[in-house]
Amino acid sequence: MSTREITRENVTETISDNDIVLLDFWAAWCGPCRMFAPVFEKAAESHPDVVFGKVDTEAERELASGFRITSIPTLMAFREGILVFSQPGALQESQLEQVIHAVAGLDMESVRAEIRARADADVARA
Image (cartoon, rainbow, N blue to C red; front, side, top):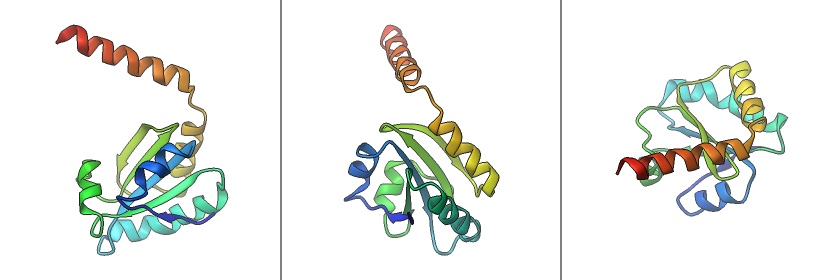
């Protein structure tokens, strides 16, 4: 499967309706973004069970701002609708593969339990 264009109109549905979603925040003028693009595309072809989305930060400034993107490229990974990875900078092929396998291998019950524990601690401090 190839990458999909992610916009303000389809981002929520894309993240919520798919198990694993990787988003590449990029811009045409960004050299590292252009270097990362073929790595991201190749991974998309190798992992048809994962949604690979590209967010053009120039065309989707509001969306990029909503995700607090301050540096591009930035890669974000979502699992079951939860942001589980976010990192600026172009990754090499082997690094991207590590991220994909780590995200796929997450114990989501543990992730949700950790999120609940943090929320409870925040409430207790308030």
